[in-house]
Image 1 (cartoon, protein in one colour):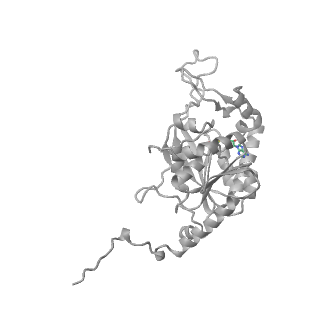
Image 2 (cartoon, protein in one colour):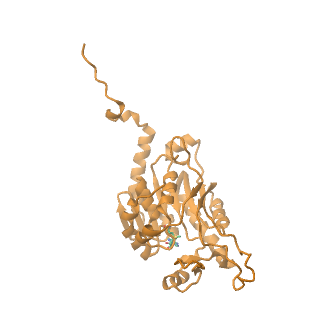
Image 3 (cartoon, protein in one colour):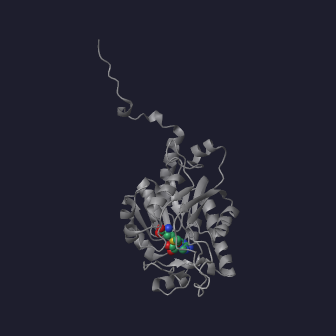
Length: 334
Ligand SMILES: C[S@@+](CC[C@H](N)C(=O)[O-])C[C@H]1O[C@@H](n2cnc3c(N)ncnc32)[C@H](O)[C@@H]1O
């Protein structure tokens, strides 16, 4: 009797029929969108890889140039108080002369990096902050596809205001990711009276960083939106484990800071988890309006996603361009 050879499933040639037609159509649409999005506007840009582009541009202006419904997720770490990256205070940071940037007090002899002090914002600066975030939020709402998520970093002092701007722009609040991180913010005794009030801290020592999770309203059911746009939900960590909203992750240190010396560098270990979760089907285009050293773009590259970023600072544009290959290949321990 002739022996019938049955190929094991893994060795079979991939069948075209196995990919649902909606998925094929979605992938083709995203391929076309990517070709369009990475060439938007006339600003200077660097194509860092076939999946990543960094544009030297103002975020508000770039958002206005993006076609509506062209981005599948936003993952960004904006200037929390706005003024710290405005010319006056940013210049002071670069020349080491203070402004809103302060070196946290050190009692252990370790070298500290400057941190912006958000308790010093005036009424006028707070009003400006709200207008700035409103402009960004409206732009994001327009550029996102239905069901697209935005992960937006903030600071416990300012998050209420920032997140309110996103909700007012029509984005649904879908929770917050809490990054558990030991910081040097807060916990200080009254200035000039440390001995007299040795048992007093003026503010709690902060141990967390909020990231707002927002979503552009879906069209129809979750399944219909996923099929039409590839968005609406979050990618699970595995079949058994959903994405979770508390992520312990220590500050960016050592080798990573050497590769990408930006004052607000976010760690790859954390960014890769957020970026991965942002595209539920693993396809789409991520946008980071405030790309800095390119940490979001590097995280997307490491995962195999497409991503575009903007920053208006030419020095950070240069840092990101140089850092991208090493940052995206950085081995991380989860
Ligand atoms: C908090 S940092 C982001 C750092 C980034 N997460 C990283 O890991 O490198 C904010 C960035 O926003 C940029 N920025 C501020 N205002 C901007 C604007 N209107 N348009 C584009 N970029 C802006 C600053 O130059 C700064 O690099």
